[in-house]
Length: 134
Image 1 (cartoon, rainbow, N blue to C red):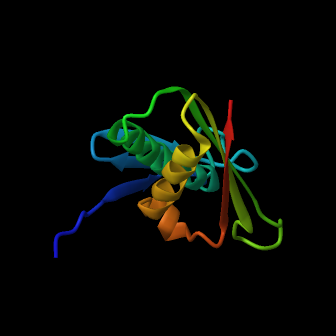
Image 2 (cartoon, rainbow, N blue to C red):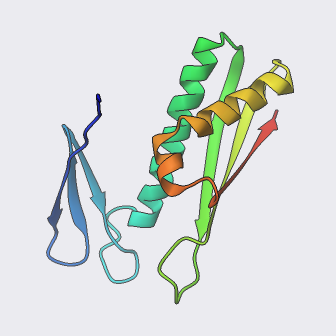
């Protein structure tokens, strides 16, 4: 079976933050409460990973289906209780400017979720998505 492998190297910053190396990219996480606020929180990185996962799939499907799209934005949000260390719910909204029929755009949403690595790792039961056509 073929597989894709990923490796990330994380180095402690001496306080509560992390320097992250992903292939030839450098990233930073930190805390805005007891750190230096030098980068996004890990939960924000998780939501960023989800938005990137969805956007890559939307882009691929738009190209493959030869759809005419003028604008595309995905906004991802999540929340947790202060005393429970997990996101309780994750929501995303796709804002899309297009003259394509709503049925085609809904098909893109369904396929983008179906083939999303991060989306499926988090789990569709925790993520609620919708499309708003502009």
